[in-house]
Image (cartoon, rainbow, N blue to C red; front, side, top):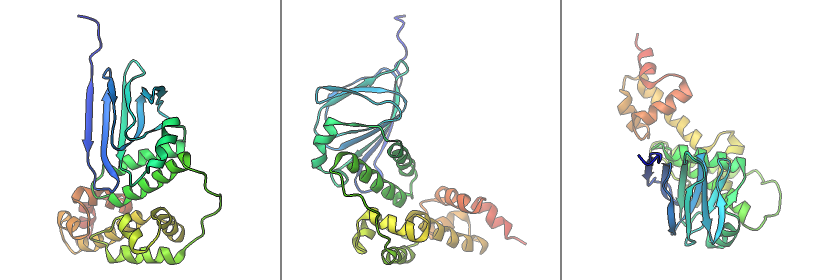
Amino acid sequence: MDGRRNDQRSVSAWQPSVPGVVEVFHAHYTEYAYPMHVHDAWTLLIVDAGAVRYDLDRHEHGTPHDTVSLLPPHVPHNGSPATPDGFRKRVLYLDASRLGDELIGPAVDAPDLRDPLLRRRVGQLHTALALPGDELEAESRLTFVGERLRSHLGPRHQAGAERRDPDLARRLRELLDERVVEGIGLAEAAALVPAHPAHLVRAFSGAYGIAPHQYLMSRRVDRARRLLLAGQAPADVAGATGFYDQAHLTRHFKRLVGVTPGRYRGSGAR
């Protein structure tokens, strides 16, 4: 035996139905080191365990677990474990619709961002992207992540409280009410209203005290309750009320009602 540790590698990758997200990539490596390479998309990286060291534009950088790293497209970089047990990371690859080329230079100069709120929001975004049927939530969270990244790297905007816009909030609520079952993406809603996606979400949340994706799921759960009490099976109810599948219905139903759809349906039997 040569005394080397076992080289462990595990990866999970998928393409979500969220505009702007090219790929989601989760990986755990103990010894593997990336050679120099480039991507044609932005690389948004968080590390959940261990640390990564990498070279970007001939400068060395590192990613402790409290850091969000943003590596720009077309700029060569590598990567290797910075701790004996390797690293566990989550990566989003984002296209130019989310972050423009004007941010490439600032990202090369300062790719590692110490921002606890941004770190938490990126983690929440990964959670939403892993759950089929929660695309509106993921799109909303991605909008705020992109906005915060631009606040770090782009020119500073003038400070000032964003004004409330109850009319904008009402128009989005009407759109959501019209499309409870089929749903609507944030980009489409923002084009129809029209408004900037981030302002649209803020206006709605400020007016109603609930995010648009939470409002939509609440409306779907309400419809599901009526159908369940009428005797329909949970699997049929899921499809009839806009949920991705029965598991998607169960997750949101239990969160809002406290019991599974099956138990709720059974409780109405007399």
